[in-house]
Amino acid sequence: MKIIYQIILIGVLFVGCKEKTIETKTSESISSPLEIVNKRMEYYNLHNFEKFIKLYADDVKIYTYPNKLLGKGTGNITSIFEPKFAAKSIQVEIVSQINNGNHVINHEIVTENGIETKYVSIYEINDGLITSVRFVRDY
Image (tube, rainbow, N blue to C red):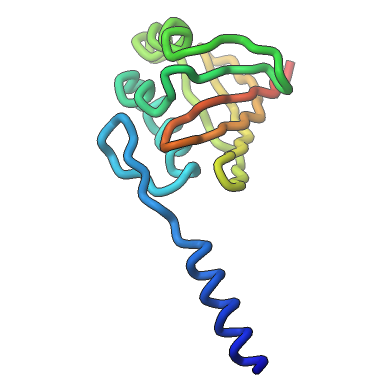
């Protein structure tokens, strides 16, 4: 009887760990929230604004942790990042990551014009898009 429970447990764990493929606005197949956030970082460092912005929900909300709303929508993100990407003045380094369900938490160092700022960024991903970001900044 014990072996039957072990087989059932292994089966449940296997099915529960299987990643699903998510179709994003970019027509790329991305398999997890972690991969979506890592694609964001890749496009950020490549200064590819067109692909970067497609990873966000149209009504994305950006907060200073825990809940001070800084901006809403991709128009807000566009006004902030498009000029920086065009000037190639900004880079991000991921120091560490934690993934829990549809949340990814990054410890990041953003360098803009030679000045480093440390962040803890909490990304929420739903239906293959980033729907909210909360920044804890090192001031």
